[in-house]
Length: 68
Image 1 (cartoon, rainbow, N blue to C red):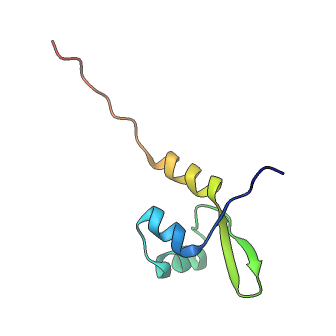
Image 2: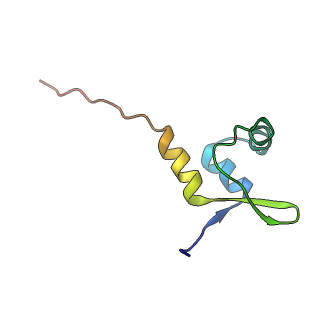
Image 3: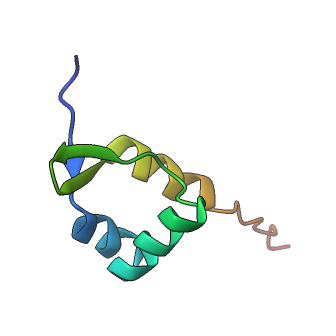
């Protein structure tokens, strides 16, 4: 298995600029855009590659007009 980077919920919140309650709300609504991983009895984490893929999919390409 490749080097698996697990992010904490706080790290994910910093990357997405959202609050911890937002992550919990997304989870309860079933709209969490990436899977969580149980890393302890009362702790979850998120694979960095999954979070980064979500972020990359949110980026819309910008068309740049050529200057004439």
